[in-house]
Amino acid sequence: MRNFLLVFLMFGCIESDPLKKRRTAHNLLHENYELWKKIDLKHYSFEQKKDCFCIYPPYAGEDGWYTVEVEYTKDEVRPTIKINGDVVFDLPKGYVGVKMIEQLFDLIHDEIQEDYWNMRLQFDGIYGYPQYFYIDREEMLVDEEYSYEIRNFKVL
Image 1 (cartoon, rainbow, N blue to C red):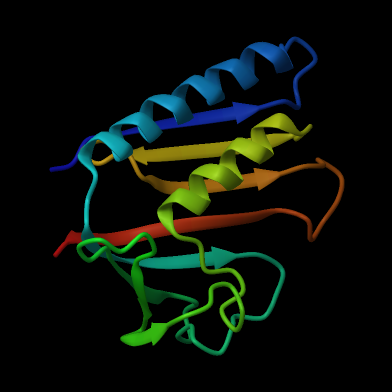
Image 2: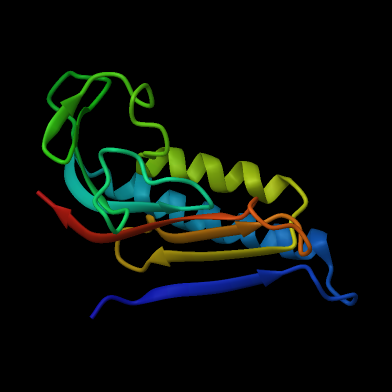
């Protein structure tokens, strides 16, 4: 069974220290990013879902999930990417919301730098990729929160 680390960062409390929580989140992100880069996978697939107050994109199933396959071939700088089995040449054009693993790390990094009320992070204990990311910037606002989730990660 895979081990994972789950961290909840909540900034709704008066006694919270936003800088300390940012440092903790940044350190956790950095540790897992280093693990991901060290493993240096060349061919893998996963199912991904973006949850928000929005309509699921046409490439997603009724439940919002879609399959992403990434393959780096010899001497290629950019990987071949497939969404639900179809080769995609230009992300995000036509595939808004799809994030590669590296893009999720970048997104989480950027969100940590901003003010937020609640953030949840979960990373895979073997490969270090973000399994779950949730951000809610404002406690009293509706519609601005979103999340990304990855499941069924496979090395091919």
